[in-house]
Length: 166
Ligand SMILES: [Zn+2]
Image 1: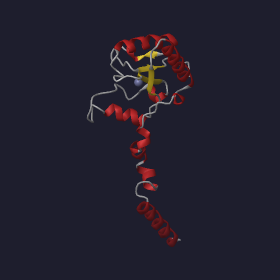
Image 2 (image 1 turned 180 degrees about the vertical axis):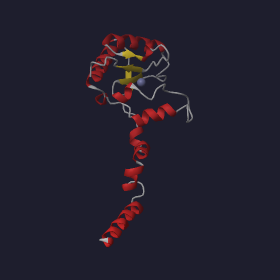
Image 3 (image 1 turned 90 degrees about the vertical axis):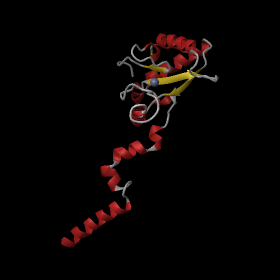
Image 4 (image 1 turned 45 degrees about the vertical axis):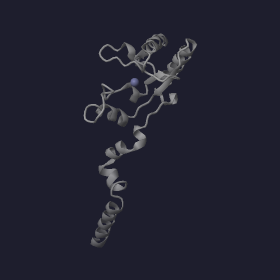
């Protein structure tokens, strides 16, 4: 009986030695941190299929209408992991760079927002008239454009703000 307990403890110790980070130890004590450190969790995702069905549907409608109006739109980001949102939130606050987001609680992490810029140009964020026209179209199709945000204008940003739609 005592022998098997000692054997068990030795085995446990071995696990901690062999897998100090990725094994049991990492799993039990460091999981959140390692999820956060995972490079792939802070990658930019710009695939429309990563959006909620309704957001995706309206995004496609929006792109079509923009195209019809001669506005060349590129989707720069859709779904955002919480790890990436947290990283962006830290930027300009606890890490270097300028502030790029005002919230840790973004519609991007809920698959209900996407960002755009102008395509085929040297200055994808330079043409304010482009963003104004796009915002009009976004509103028309039922999205909430960040262009109209009162406290913190976010020109590239579009979100679905109708909670009853998925
Ligand atoms: Zn955005």
